[in-house]
Image (tube, rainbow over all chains, first blue to last red; front, top):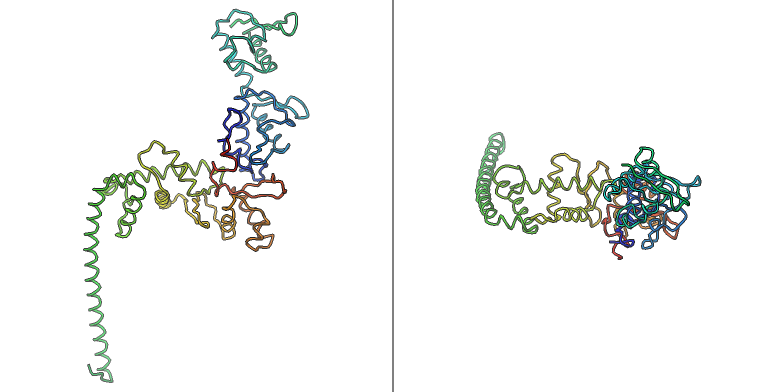
Length: 179
Length: 251
């Protein structure tokens, strides 16, 4: 079984035709489905948030079978994820894609859970602490992309679960929970 | 008997023919009766045998296969009905029923990948994986039997031969001779190119492209434009095993 680091690759990844966009509709649908799942699972496992279409993202090519996804294919699969609400283009040129293996709402739920688990209901934390502090180590929040975190926090702020306030610099941006 | 011309002679010949015919029928009846008696003896001996070797039949696919052959020769079909002596004695009815259900399931779940055509070898392998904990091992012969039972139920399953291999078809797609020949060619490397088909089968270019396009439309083939030499390859998932693609075993 082939692996990328610790990640187990599915069998289709080693079958050359899957690296060519299929013309027949049903076959294409199956192909897109497989690639969508693979991309999401890989990003979740490796905590990848941004995929650069013109960069060397490991899933875009398989050296063992000497195949690479064309630019068109890459756009097709990522666009499918965008349509599902599981990804967003970060630029108009569609060069970078933000992968939401958790939707923003799911991230917000994780934050609430995290706060309750650690008895931080009335506490204050910096944004940085949430994503890299000792309490978050071992949780999914550890290493979360900052912009994704901010969006989740803003969502919670909108619901009155917390207040975001600016510190003396962006590094001190803080959050007061009131769950 | 002296042959006499005229009507009398004709009547004698007719009477002689009748007598011979009657004799012939009696002989045939005698033979049939003997045979029936032999068969009935054979059948009860077969039943005794089955009773004695019940476990072997259940557990050993090769033995089971030979047992079925014996039954077929005597005109006994242990799978004919779910009830009755055989099914109860051997529980074989359930075994093949269960197998049939699993086979249908595997064919359905792999259909998106292989277009509804799967090699018997691959099917058995996937069955084996699915039945890891089960008491009874499954051989290709068992698969074929289960599938023939499925056919009787009118489920559209069919086993076709392509070259040396057997493929199980679970969709109504009919394959013509051209398609068959391409599939056979594809068994070597898992794919073909238009050039290769034309060359090896001595076809004009239109014929090869048409056949390949049909196979593509039916979901039995996938295109691959990634080869260095720039030539399009047509891959056939039904002739490969899902876990034996190039590079799958590199770790």
